Every structure is written in structure tokens, then in C-alpha cells.
Image 1 (tube, rainbow, N blue to C red):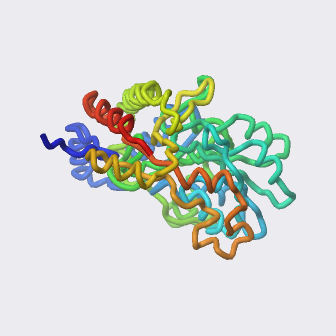
Image 2: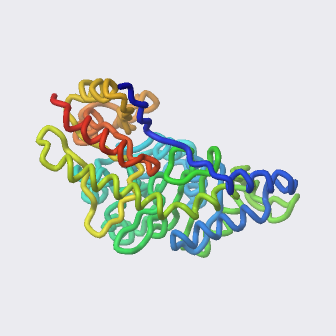
Length: 365
């Protein structure tokens, strides 16, 4: 009997989201209104940050964070190569240069030892990524403090995750989030946010993303328009109400996967850092023969993904970069060659989880 295909993601839409969008449309206040202010405050409060502001997407959030920290021409910013490309290109877009480093083999986040070795007099900032929802090692912040270097938490995949009881987005000097539709929570389109625990950065960030102005026609500093619409902020407020339940469901599914795959010698399942609540934006396996695995899953009518097939330092855009050649970061290159993601969205049914488990268990390389 034919079975419906299991996708990598499903959109959550409920009556409250639709009613919120209609209410805001009818109000005529489509930008810079009460929803934006409330969403920024509620998201900062949820994450345990001092302050925050919504912005138009996670990529510009990183640009705004770097700009606010004074990163520019002649500076280096350390960033893992195993991440989405926006974590790196934001550095170039403010005139600085990325310095790519390895990740930890078990957790896929920035390796503290590699970070320490990469720091130079030109290092102006560090971008650590909570990749797949795994909280990064807190040793990163100790190293940064020792050298007096600010840390940007790229939390684009970390919504709802925590380490030792502290939420992702509240550890560094500044944190950035994405609310892209596939993320753990969304805003009905592209969206992002910037959070900080530094009083001196709160107004700088909000000013920069609104043309650098202190009044409607008074522009005190250079800035641009990275604002998020009222409708999207309203939708984000609704989605935030569900986030804890969604993350709990993701953890429930991941726990079932880990238990089922623990004895499969030809598959490496992901580990969770001690003390962490993993946000499980992605559930990533290492399978060796990825092409065979994906063909098998496709034949079982189950979608898969690759996050990410090409390390940042080997992307064509970095072909002229000093690190833009194979062999520079061998662990990252190995990881990118055999990782594959399977569905872990909270809207999976128990029956669908069973199907995914059975499909993975039935694959032989």
C-alpha cells in the first residue's frame, strides 16, 4: 500500500496566527509598532538576555552584530567552516576577513582548542554557532574573555536550547537568531533577531537597523533598514507560545532515534553535550555512503537533507581565500562528506517516527 511521503518539515499555522495577521493588517500599523516592541522584549526575556530587537532575517542580524562591535576592514573574525554560509559571508560584508577553524567531532560546534590556536592580534571577534541546536562549548567564552575578544552567538538553529539551565542566546556579548520558515519557530517569512546582555549595545543595534536615526528625520550614525514587519512580529509572538512544546517533541523524537540507532555500527548518531538541552533543529547522522543512504530513504518515501555538503572554506566564493583549498580543515571536510539529516520536526506523528526508524535500520551500506 502506498504511503505518503514524510517531508523534512511542515509549517505550523493556526487560527491565532491568522487572526493576528488580520488584526494587524486592519490596524494600519504595519511597521515600528507595538508588536515589534513586544516581540523584541518577549524574545529577550525568553532567552534570558538584557535586551533585543527583531530584524528582517538572520543574515542581516549577523551583519548588524559585527557592525555594532566595530568590526571592519583589516580585522579577522574566527568562525567554524562547518556552518551555513551566512555565518562567514557576513564577515566579508563588513569588510573583514573570516578565519576558518575546525569543529568538535562529537558535537559539530566550534572546537575550543582550534579557536585558541587561531587567535591573533588581528582577531576582532569570534562567531560561535550553535549548529543543529547543539549548544557550543562554554570554554569558548572563557577563551574569549582571556583575550578580551567579543563573542557573537550565531543562534540561528538554537531556539529553545540551553546549557546548564541557561538558554542559548544569553551567553555572548551579542546573539543573533533566524526565524526562517524551517527554523524551530518562525514568523511567516524571513525574520531574525539580535539579543545582547550589554547595556551599551542595546540602543546601538536598534538604531543601526532603523537608518541610524534617533528621530524620524534625525540620523545620528550610519545605519540601514533591517526592520521586521508588525505582522511577522505578531506571528512570532504566537509561535513563541508553542516553542517549549515543540522543542520537547523534537527531543522526544531524537531520543527515540538515538535509542534505535545506538547499536548500528555503520551509522554514527549525534551526541548531546553534557548538561545541554539540544534544540534539535536538525538530526544529523554520519553514514559513510551518503548517496546509497539517501537513495534508500527516497525509495522508502522519506525525505532527507544535507546540512551542509560543502564547507564554507571550500565554497567558490572563497576560492581566493588563503584557506580556500582542500586539506586545510580535514575533520570539517570529512564531516561534510558523509552527513545526512533525517526528519525531526515536531509535527511528525509517532507512526511516521516508526517509519523513519524502520527505514534507517533496514539500510545496509
